[in-house]
Image (cartoon, each protein chain N blue to C red):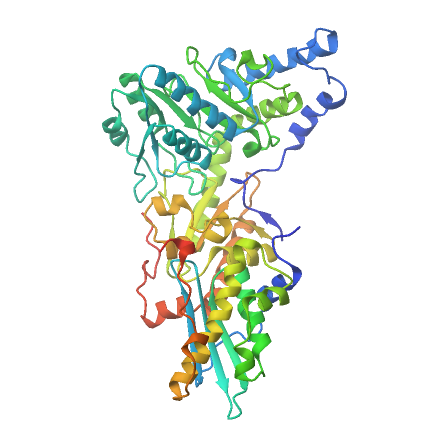
Length: 402
Length: 144
């Protein structure tokens, strides 16, 4: 059996999306900036896609900027707010400890320029407390940026509430909604969102295309300089096929949110229940405030990379937050932020189901993970020390799920 | 190119000499759980100072398991002084290379073997030059 269960990393492009994109490679291939017909037709299609996206998000078309993806959108949102804030002497930005690196690394760069960054706690359940945001806001706060749903543990943040606080305090509010858009109903107007980032490849669209929504009146700073595309705020010939793909994929994803959530939440229950039977394991992140596709566990006594490589041999594609898979020497900053000790964070596993997942696949994953964890524990001296009592367990024998 | 060579994947999937030697003559353990890898080596040594048997237990990533497996292969049946000459470079080469950020796994394997031999010498009152057994490298990797 092959089970692709890493949909938080990327998704397969749907047939419908591919079909919708194809004409824009070979038929309507004109440059939207060109004045002849095949260019103007492309321009028309571009604006139709913009209108479609705007309508879905509850925004105006002129507030939609197409980018190369979520990272670019995050960068531009934060840099724009920082530059506009600095002009008024506002050089303080609030975010959280477990944001995506597209946000955290942009903030680190700004910190080196003299900005002050406050990262609020995300607590053991992986959810930000809006009260802590309110308390952190100062006279000189230029921006609050909090992700809508976490990419590793899937926890959903109280975005509308945070947005309301920011509106009242007259501070711009950005949310990285890359992991949330296909699982949660989002309306920028109703949820008090000033800026938002999404990326097509997370919802069966193509890679390399995303959206930055920026509320009218927010002065954007260019991250890419050049031509006058995207109302002068994002240079470069538009990725028309990609943009069409994004719009079609977004429309499709959003139309099926409730249906998919209903189906996925049952599979999520089954997966959590099955994995909880593995002794000394625990679910990462809140049991309920999480996207229905995400299950993330830590297993004591094993290391995540070897776990995922052996799962790959069994046809299960998943990811881990261990240091060895993060490409850095530390395990996932997300797991550390929710208070997991290093030695436990190394033994993490993220499963992100697709909408087409089945009960059989879930059972297959549970069996495969159970087998591999047991096998690796069988020759892990760390596990041996836990069993003999030489080192203390972090978890209870039976998973504690709130 | 894949992350790991075929040799690494083979030793990771089918590790040689996995397990415990209950009446081992020397046992060495290096690494720690915070860094994400621990290697433990068990040696059975005969009167001729030859490694009759070797087993390992490893907590760690694919390359840590493969490095342990390869290192045990390389010293099994070898005289102790020869086993002590095993370098992390030799382990890495025998595995057809490791990605740069995984080289520390082969260092751990070399250190685990040295630590087990030292334990054997200590257990049996055999004199040795402490310079041959440098302290385990500090775990700068994990900023500990």
